[in-house]
Image (cartoon, rainbow, N blue to C red; front, side, top):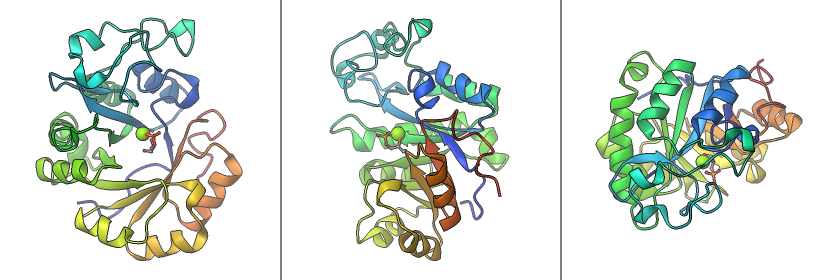
Length: 252
Ligand code: G3P
Ligand code: MG
């Protein structure tokens, strides 16, 4: 388990933020082209248990397909165009598998925050499979000191990931940090707490840091706000505006 935070101050949200179709390899490349060195993305399972990237339960918003991903095989998902909805120049961009994402991160030198985003009712299976795959796919990076950081809003998913990949660092995700954040993060042996920056204040950041946890704040799209969060002690800011909040914008 990590004792120091090996991740940069800025992480590109859903791959390339709003500059590219979310959760695609084109997104990873967009961030890397701007010099970014960390990326967050959302991983879930197809019906045939292939780990792949998609934020929503359905493919409707971010592809030319229709329906719930939980009932689709990956072979079918792979035929969908997950790029055109953002811009015609991304036409044909697929929803990548976690294995393709790991290879792309390696090629581009990107550290990864793998958000486990289970389809409804599949929390345990998703946590178990995504955790085990992340451990296998990022084995070299983990050995080199930059393991993939697993996170989830789902305690059940994160618990299953802990059991399948105990050596990988975990962060529990909240929108608003609940009163029992200490108990919840301790139960899952988390290294970090991930929260919406809208509900963070200086005193809360101080308490979380004093408990020995690292903090990732999302989704911060204003440079001054990002600087304020870092001045309070937030370790990494996850942003859609990878153009506005550059890779070194928050360096000391
Ligand atoms: O992991 C931070 C952030 O991605 C959580 O919210 O809905 O964008 O996955 P969401
Ligand atoms: Mg996410």
